[in-house]
Length: 387
Image (cartoon, rainbow, N blue to C red; front, side, top):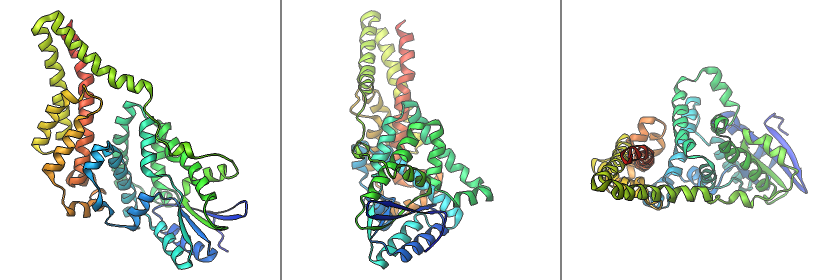
């Protein structure tokens, strides 16, 4: 029997569970996972993975099947980009430590195959997790989050040896989220606390009587805390709908803008109304185009962002970034080599702008951001013209 501080033995009914807390970029964790599974010879090995993350690890060419058009049309470009940014952080740490990210998971899968144990995916779908976090965040926090992740990525080049050793002992990806969570508690709640409960429930439901569960070290205290509690996880698999206030704002601002322009024509004649239109079109077009330009979009994509923004800002069902993203897809025409180099390109900030896949996602996000800022810039300018 292996004795290690990272190993916790739990019982649930007739099930015996060996819970292993790992660091996702630690060679020691990968070796420990393999030794425990070979020694315990469990019926089931639980992994802190959802189906999509499992496929991304076991099917190295999965990115080649990414449907960018579908992601943009289904309004998932921001979520896909956030997922890639988090993967980038983990890959850079792994490179710093000289190990492949997910090595402990691959060790668990290999050991499970050797012992004849079945694998059981215990984590919530990453898309649901990110969607829940995104939906619960305020508009300004949504703007701040990518910037915080980018800044955190930049800090990786200046890690001290002590910091590197500290990261070997913990779940670095979730440490990043914990840091972000200090300013954004709702992010920590969704990414860590909710998943603690979700993992607890799924591990307890795993088939067999002898189970080894491999999870990030950051989840271990929460799993142990929740272990004997009875609860449902149905609500944790639901993406909360937009609140009533969000819908009121989404439709209220465009209606207010249209009313302002109509009032401008009614009270100030063609000159007053035209001046208000000028500020509305100008602010939206310029800032949306600037957002696309920052993402190094094709010149025609930048023009499409400028043309679309004044109209899409008045229609909550369409966004300027989606228009610009679709145009960039058709103009940029990502090739197989872009998908093949994606895993390497996302390890650097420059790579995010160089790779056509991530550049398209950046075009969507930055164009939408520019258009949103343009709306708020235009309102006081239009009010001034009205007065």
